[in-house]
Length: 392
Image (cartoon, rainbow, N blue to C red):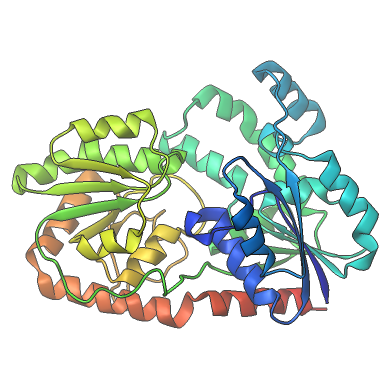
């Protein structure tokens, strides 16, 4: 098959996580047996060597310079209201990229959009099989933020919510197949188009980067990991630092917290002024920090989709205390693979249990790693994705 893969986000290196890691590993698997042409955009932080390295995993790599379409808030909202496409999708739209697609579309059997923002390039008249790999429902995420009080701007998001619902419902109609990472997203998008073919394909873990720990470090060290310019991660880190941690410190005065992740915002950097909190910024190996932590806390209050941070902590063998959102898409109860918490008191109780019980830490560690090895590998995800592409 000749496959055209669209990814506005440059999908390399996969160590950046998020969109990059999923797109790269699916591309790597597909390119083993088929001809995959990748169209992507280059931002300022993408080096020439990264482009050449990515080229090795494609049949053809076409890279466009990223252009940002500037406009004011009123203009962006007016365009969204009239045209029906959010500014987050329009902002990086490349006419040159669209022109290349229109000119070369006939030589491809299948088009995949790696992340829903790429749907903007798909014309209804394209006759190829069209697949959108939705990493998480935008409408579902905004709705969840409003319900949990974690929205940055309640008024703006309440106004945008029905527009996002209209947008997501509309673009889903363009595709022959939809791929999501969790059952929650599947249900959300199925409600927009009950007849569409939707497949749930969770993320995987690169075991070369996230090896299983060799020992339990013990102690009272907490860890939170994630890109620290992401709204959901910022909210979780602040919730952990400002509401959960003080209650833990009252019981365990020596407890420490490391917030590990690239691009920390000013409000995240300020957390390091508090007692026993370290904000690292980008690190060479997240696995090293996971191996040194007593407990990885994932207090997500918003954000749809499967969480790479949860899969990576499980792969590393670090015991987890997490919210429902942090454990979305995972079977964590039978056998027990993580402790669940959603309120401050529940977090304090669960973390204290793990601090006091090395046997429980060991049980969670081993069970979680076994789950990842069995069901959350990139090989498995790639095989499932290929099955969707080959389905009649």
